[in-house]
Length: 365
Image (cartoon, rainbow, N blue to C red):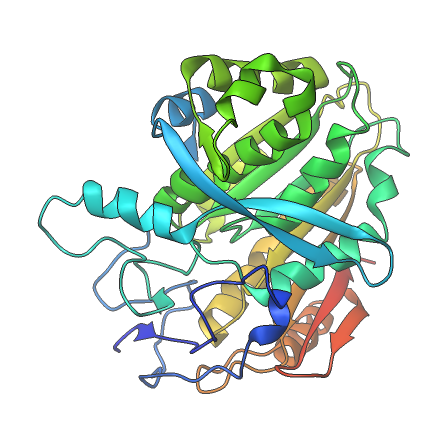
């Protein structure tokens, strides 16, 4: 199996101009042949990346001294807009090339959108993540309407637009340290994606939101489209999270029983008093092949089952294309599999123009 293919979207990434509507139907440069394995990214003779937890403080210490960014304006269907900052893709590539040791090309530098089992497309923002942001904007009140803060888990997060939106909305709600921690779990197959785009995007979101209240941030943002990541800035970021009761946790590796166990063991929501918590699992563009669909479905079901066992409510919001042409995954297949496993599935959003796609809510009865 080649394992390398391109969805042939127009442009390297979702651009600010035109938003997510510029995409064309995906095509595939190499057919995907059936494999006996049922893992997320089955490659003959190649093991999956192991489930790994990453320490936030260590990740902050590995950041470059400066990052370039732009903002993506998302129209919330007549309910205003949200501006989400993202590290520039060219800036990521510059860093990857600077760190190149002369060996194989770094993941994400080639022409392929996905290189099976090596790079799973996390450096780019995909249109279904924008669809998820729009759906979340209609129910963002759950961030503040419960006594126990929710737990957000984004699987295959990449640039993490849905989690970034929730984080940005929460910045205006959590004005002081809370007894209950808002736990945000960011998971991507590639640890380099978490380090190079996911974490920087959260720092950018915080810095732009808080700049008027912080001389440190005002100075760090003095150059248009750039943020200086000084030690003072990264320390201020950590201090802010602690003060507001927000936890950011990062996990990499293939979807597996070990992956589920690792995430489940990361309990930071402070529900030791028996209070019920709501867990929201997010996934955008995570079911592009039958193998990914199978592993993703079993992962979210395992997580929801664990939450229910502990008396917590849980649901999954999944955004995907109706069909990934030539690759084999589809939103309809996910819905059918989820219902086969006994879940309640509700369609929340459908896009009929351009590449057909949708967002569904999945929960256990």
